[in-house]
Image 1 (cartoon, one colour):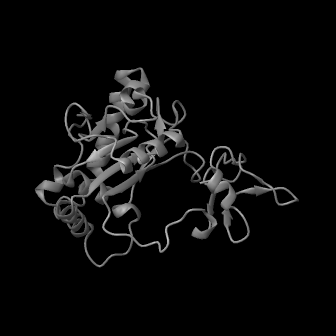
Image 2 (cartoon, helix red, strand yellow):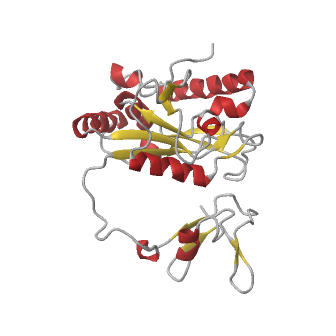
Length: 261
């Protein structure tokens, strides 16, 4: 995304926008200068560019089995932690769910956050049921000792319209902390278990204020926070009903731990 992009905020991406890059949904002036703050078409302004537009790339761009896998979501309800560590069961559940949220400006007719679920984070055409791929993911996680993280790039301090978007510098710091092994072991001293979704949120992270790591803390209103968290948990449950018959008991237990009555 290139909304509010500047060379100061994202120098590598900004400099990658040159001949050969493809911009989408942006406004240019007569001289071809892009106004990255203009969202008159949509907030989904984007760029795609060849990998060689970025300095210091890996050559060849082929690696071994990953040590960490990141699931990205943009939670416009503002209740998911900015980063959380998932168990194999939770990874399978969230992989099947493929949650993100639609907000005003991304699609016509959307005026408030709407949960959006897309199996396997894209509902691609696959010959097998999504639960089969989720079971494969869980199996490979256990065999290779891979960590899976749910990274929320959405809202903090409240839902869309009240809170604010999680700063990219914080997301980047969290990703770097994972890659550097700075988030510690999966234990009570280093992690807090989210009371609704059951995911493990780190208590501290280099370069990120502690209060940002706890979505409930950023709201300053526990009643409204839990009301919204239960609303989202119920949406997860309703969406997963179509997968329950095919999912194993282990995967079913990877979902939210509490729901609203």
